[in-house]
Length: 169
Image 1 (cartoon, rainbow, N blue to C red):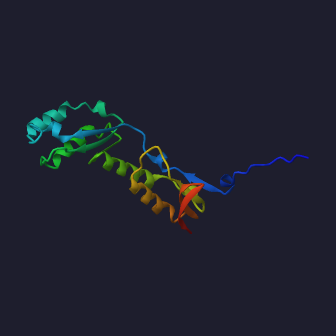
Image 2: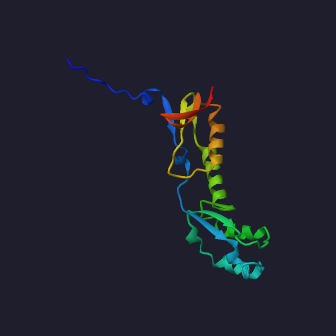
């Protein structure tokens, strides 16, 4: 008499919630605006010239993008220069920040983690996916632990077959 061997998925039966933080990364094009492109000889801000160059910016080129404004030169520029670009584009972009691309990604993930509804994870055992094809800022993981610690039964990091316990409540 042959017996059928049933293969059980113990991970699925464990009630473990697999969470991939990379799914929180906002979708959309990222574009950088270098202030040096608006400066006289890339070094000096002449207000009239600067305002003329800002006026030539086509906001439609930035529609629904995430924008970071940076200054690749060591030129000293007044704070209001960033405000002029922001005022020109704020109605069409998803987000605009001062800093580099990494600064933008950190801020976007901060907002994504803070606004995500984790209520379905209350009292659950959570496995935070360790491998991703997408780069996630390290700070996002820290903020995620802050959000999950008060509500999760436990948190682990890695893969189901090999994980590191982070905490148990």
